[in-house]
Length: 491
Figure 1: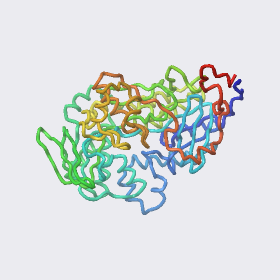
Figure 2: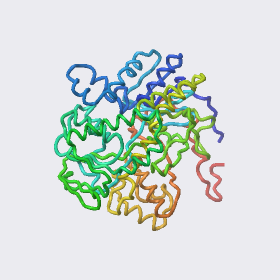
Figure 3: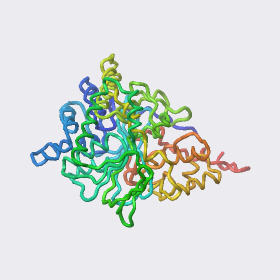
């Protein structure tokens, strides 16, 4: 049986942008303004990403004035970008659309409601943003334990205000920002428990650059306001644990060698931000492990051009994906906007020294921030009794037992334990498993094999897929089956 030959499916756009956050919007605006056909796919119902989430709705009437004031000027600053994105002709914006497959040749699998299919473009800008570093610790799966980003989402999109005894624990500028936003909303946290120390700030001074001074001043302003508000703050905390039966009721930690325990209704944790790499990994892009961050990030050139992982692939030809914004390097809104414009300029073939300079300036504070707020909650490996994979309820002890029994590779451990097979597809457990594996047998941190769908895909949508590549979708019914000895039935 000879395989059928098909032509290459036609492109649906010049550029597909994944994500309508700061990087995705800025790239789409410049590309469409230059006459390129642009499709923007975004999971959210409105543009803005996590940083500017629900900004349009919160700017629609006077009743949200107090909320906007509480969220601060950095949040409201995204209004002009969103307005420009909405007003730019040539942008085919598709909200509430999930990307469940991505390939290096520019093929994108999408899902919206019960409909799904494939789109293709000459270029793909992957601007899927970042995620908070997973932090497994005793009690982290209890109701009432949330990440800082989740609390911000409830404030921005749900217009909800936390109540009760609130403890913020972890490290990073987002802890200060959220605490200040809560203060403006009239909510006084019971404690800010920081893992970072003064010595981290002193060591970080070697990374301080003049262009980073505005970010440092902003952080000092947050700190001063929190101090003036009388919000208690402790530094150098370790051994964080949430306690309770049906939900969190108390939190304990070690401070200066002594155990501190206090009642708690809401424990908000944050241990820094890392690039969201699930789509990059699905596309077969090369990822590099950073020991200082205990995480992976895509390997790209400064203009975001991604690299393939060496070896077999479903697709051939050049890699058509550029990674931008926090999905490439954590830098915040200004850096993401600058890099989105830089990627657009490179796709357009324009000389881009101005946009490259803007990216460097916007990223100037990164070295200082990384040194001043090193990972804290995620630094120690979890104890055997601590849940690592919350989807499948798998503990660190179970993983260690399999490693000590001979499992030496992440995919092998996944097949044995189902760690990484739940709805999150390893986004919240892969890093911790990699660190446990490395500690047990010095294995290099190689991630799980990535396969689509990276997001849940209903069977009904799968059955009605549109835009299939006939060459990849063909079924070989005979030649893929082994022939038994002496069996000539298929000859």
